[in-house]
Image (cartoon, rainbow, N blue to C red; front, side, top):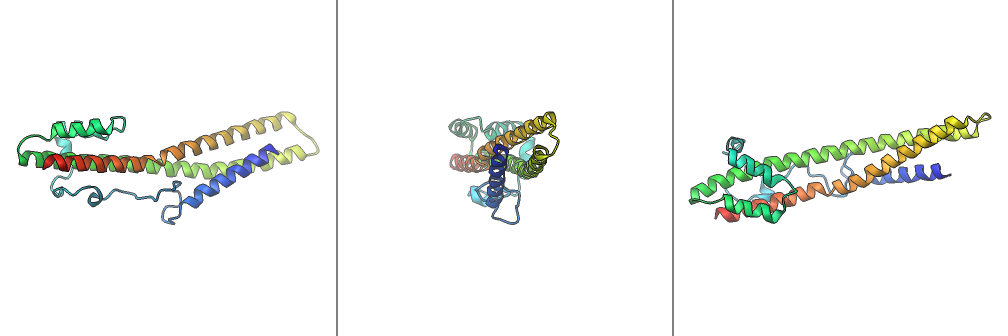
Length: 203
């Protein structure tokens, strides 16, 4: 009875996760937030065009090091904003040059972080679906073993323990996914805030 209840709970949870993927283009997306594959520059940047920057920000050691630091979410946003203000000094032209490089680096880096996180979430969602199928099959097998004419208690116990382990892994993944679903939004917010700080300090 307990295993049947566990299986039912897992099936409901998996169905709920799948239902959240309202956009048919992204059937493996498990989060309630709509999937936006990439941040658009226009959504976060109102400064001068960065078309001429490309990946040249990587060639500037100071900019590259600062981008790495600012993109790290362990660095408090207020501290990161102060670092931006301290960096964007000099003449108007110097501020513009450094500001464009810095934003281009942050845009590339944080977009890559988002993509990595979202790909990870979709991989886990696929594993969750596989886990549901595995638990369902093992549950049926266990019920057959328990109702058979000859009960092999050692094998029944082994499969029962395996099922308990499989369901525990499923639930652990589900809890982690719920937390990780917030990460892309946090990255969006960080990029927007830092872009705004760069624009203000360039003026």
